[in-house]
Length: 493
Ligand code: AMP
Image (cartoon, rainbow, N blue to C red; front, side, top):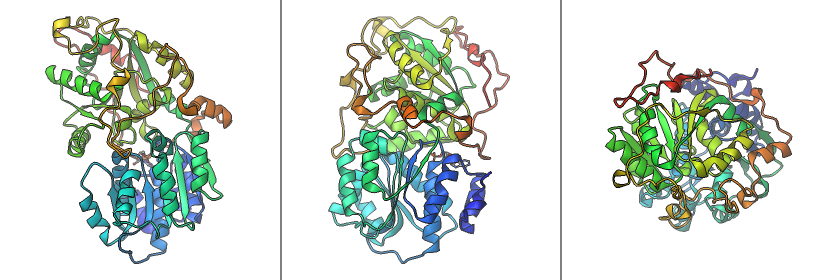
């Protein structure tokens, strides 16, 4: 078995890892760290939740610490490109945590906040710069930053970068980097478009891969509830009366939908917050910190906003809307299965979404068990009092019109574009994957990979994620809706 001490990492880094409570490397770390320590380029297939941030951060910190250099003005030694501001912030936090015993500086820059503070932070140079592509180029264009001293480049979540329309920014960035450098490239999937991009960044890379996307699903206890759109809100409120739902991420397909759900919860006296691309940075930070510190137990998010957010102890994921891209389902439910933990995912499925469910089951090769509607679930609100959801028979709130408005210019990472809608020839669940991206299933076949138990991230001695199921009251809400059935299937450990 590989241990962190086997890699030859500098003592201050090992000390920081001990402080983090990491006992042993996850599979992506075990595979990546030796190559990266040698200075080799790496091309990795790994999704968030596998421990890939440490897989690149640890060898980078080690290499910087072994070769100290004075900082150059408006310059950095390491550049980490990441698609969203949340992910960028988390990557920077990880560098700071693992590098806490080293005298290295880490700065993060992303769009949506004033640039002048970032310019000031860069003025004297930094060791590690984590950036979203659009803001990075803005800084370069304003001559507040030069990339000529970059020794190590990381491109993280490449598939999401392309989904967000960063391809041109990335192509330009690569021309600004020194040819002599180490590059580490990570993506959750590796269709042709991404591997072509990887080729333009990498030189003779070592290839590493863990946890094909579909296998994450096996770690999560899943269920689906068939429910008309106009009863979803009341169903959600009913489920949330169960006190075992400790920290829950609720996914909606649109920003508008997320806000509507939060407004509904508010009316029902349940504290919730929404996080999506139309929220300002302070609003996002407030929502996230409330969710982290437990003052807000329900975070309602869209896919793009949630991907990469690392919050420990998410006990439940609720898919208020099923995603039409099956990989998104796996990413979503993976939020409750971080670094090897298990979780519980409940999906609401209306008639239009049944085809999406089929696609999901095909991808994960798992049949999602059906749960009945809780007994005594209140009827749908009458049209006059309804909360804005389309009534039965009307289209679900996922028409194009709801999404994609308010996109910032320059493909700002706050944009909620996400994967483009698949064309489904009239039925919601059919059609081809968009953009020529093979599904994770196709990819798994093409790579000859089989989801294997052994590939899963190990669980370190991190704080237990989910609370053990308490012997709790029946979970009845005042109006008699019974929610105790939620406990039917015991949590896997
Ligand atoms: P990432 O895939 O980088 O987003 O990491 C997912 C989570 O796993 C983060 O909360 C990390 O702090 C945690 N983590 C990373 N490496 C380890 C490890 N070796 N042992 C335990 N937890 C880890």
